[in-house]
Image 1 (tube, rainbow, N blue to C red):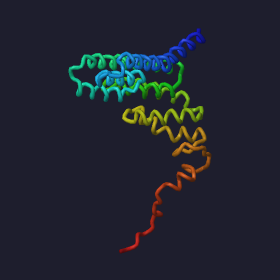
Image 2 (spheres, one colour):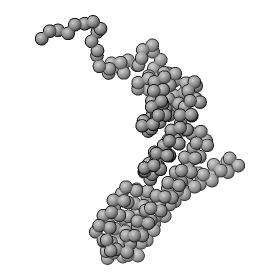
Image 3 (cartoon, rainbow, N blue to C red):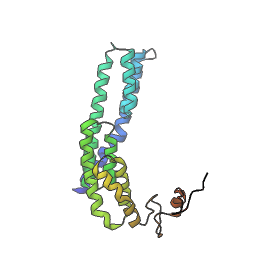
Image 4 (cartoon, rainbow, N blue to C red):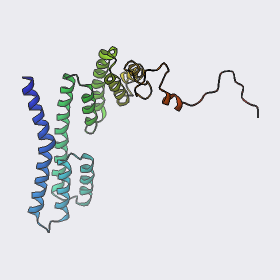
Length: 222
């Protein structure tokens, strides 16, 4: 059952990442051929927008649609293009949510954070805050279960989550735990490079720290 589920997931990913963009480009090419060499700027603009949507270039598609609506406010393609973009983004967001759930189920913290990062392109406001609260709480539990193992992966995930969720309580706790997790994994607490020395950081990091005056030394008078 597990092998069948994994094969199904890989097939879906292949269709999503390879077949769908290729079909979108083929449709755009056929539309261009149907329009002929004398196609007007409206038709060419619509084709370019659909190409951006098919390739998942959301920011570009939004900019093109905004310009299209400004230049051709009465064009019949404009409302349809807006709907196509919204539906395409909704479909990708649903796919990313499913992949996030699968990553959590598989205990894959790195993939879970990656899916969350991709979802930030589609979500905002309270919906994004709710997603972040869910993911950071799960990552914090993931790190806590593995903290004593001393694996470099745990330190890496904790640092990544601390960066992504710095404005949350769990994020700040993860940030404070990063130096200890790195040291336990045989890494420099500051830069995460291999280091097992007695100092607070590796020689390179210590050399980069600003020099401080020795205690009790008087400053020269002007």
